[in-house]
Length: 247
Image 1 (tube, rainbow, N blue to C red):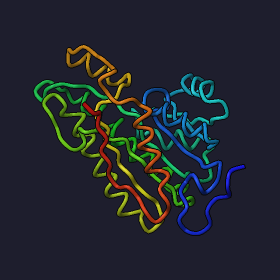
Image 2 (image 1 turned 60 degrees about the horizontal axis):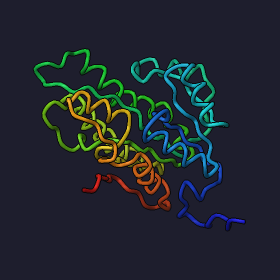
Image 3 (image 1 turned 90 degrees about the vertical axis):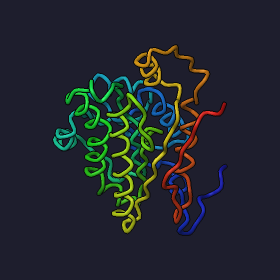
Image 4 (image 1 turned 60 degrees about the vertical axis):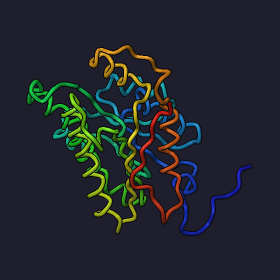
């Protein structure tokens, strides 16, 4: 039988209860799937974000017992309406922003449509979803984790739109941390390097390069990084953490 949770103020999300509640975007593949699997294995309650009802059904089949929330992150202005028609958790111990989109191209070639779609999904939607769930995060003294990218710290050629969205995401996290510290809400940004996910396969296709997943980090290794931040005792937080493939 496992030992009882540690008493006192220094409790991690994991120590608070066996059924901590997590809202996760991007759980359908890659890093999001790896994180959801790990949290499900330890008995936590999952609320998985889905863009539509069909995707929600797939996630519930993949993660028995999980709840789903439906809304299109590509249309952040409609998220308030979408959540207003669904049952929400009473408290949120962690909100994990893992979903994202990428389209490479030179500044001279990227159209407003690409810019708007990239910023909507990668920056505005996380900001709006965080805003809508702040009451539940404050009630739980919860944790907001943003999966950013190395592109959130530097911008290379052909990565302008994606890097701009990720630089903005860092600014969002920094401002949120300063604003919500008084409510006990922790905020962490993780900057993974290249990871063997379907998005990485798409990036290689856009770059015209052969994709070898063995060269890159596994989603499971990034999931371990996220859970390390999530499980820190209360009174401490990781603000920014970069993780890179070796070799």
